Length: 154
Ligand code: HEC
Image (cartoon, rainbow, N blue to C red; front, side, top):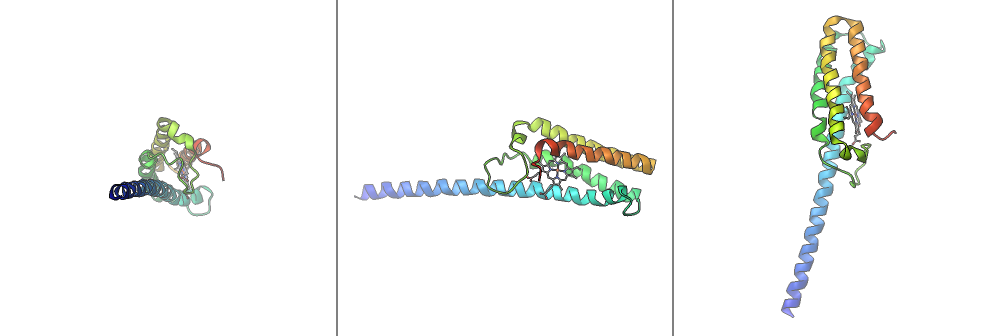
């Protein structure tokens, strides 16, 4: 009787452990998804004023663009780290396509392209408005280049 009881409680404890591990995995995925979305929201935050300048809605300011592009270079450099965790199967809402984790090298290369173009934009700010806006267009295209392949369309 005692043995049966011990055995049953062991089974019970083991099943609790499995549930705890599963919950932790899901929590880790949710955190990873929130973190990478936060990174991209901040990236969007730095893009916004440059978009406004490109559209002529706010005055062109090369110093502001240089600062924002510097930050965008740092942020896009973090993308491969923040997407390292394969979150396929997570229930948290995400626009990231599962194929990212079959193509991590290509994903990282696309992040590097954005990083390089952000740095090129910093350099272009010393050449005047025309070259700056051209370099900004190239940066924007690099965002789109990754989104077209790896982000669900809304
Ligand atoms: C290497 C791929 C890649 C690059 C480069 C990239 N993105 Fe994204 N972006 C994604 C993916 C994937 C998502 C969806 C993430 C999710 O929902 O988990 C996303 C989502 C976003 C979001 C929505 C974030 C949210 O959840 O509210 C913004 C804003 C964004 N990207 C802006 C940019 C800008 C601006 C650039 C260029 C400077 C850029 N991205 C470059 C892959 C990329």
